[in-house]
Amino acid sequence: MVEKVTLTVDEVLARADVPEPADRVIFKVDELYGLSAGTKFPLNKTESIDTGPMSMTMDPKADPATNVGMVDFTSKSLRVRYGVQVVFPGLHELVMSGKHDLDLLGPVRAIATDECTLTPDFSGWRALGCLELLPGSMWTGAKGG
Image (cartoon, rainbow, N blue to C red; front, top):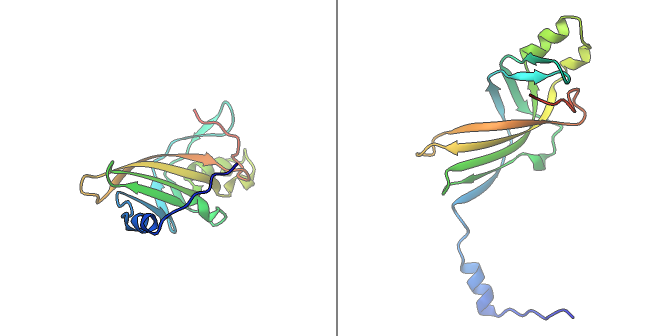
């Protein structure tokens, strides 16, 4: 049997008077352009390349619900998740070597997740992140070292 729940007018008004939490804010990521230092990028189980500097932009094919973040002012942290397309010189060099298919030159699609520590005055942050390669990308299934 379902118990009947009743609220009084005073209880409803009391709920409405509770202030919204101000220490955490959720936001939408609408635009993005970023540069990152190079890293080793897997080609297969035994080979990898040096990417060189990577350039990232928002992925126009990404689900908009993917592109969100939350800042926590109390802990001075920021977590952001967004769909990106990544291009890098190492990929161009690989394809131009003639050893690989030209189709590899298409942007690598990924979901980026950044865990950030805010500066004490909230004027900036240091981000540590990871990329999850998406199905449909030529690199799906690659495993990093």
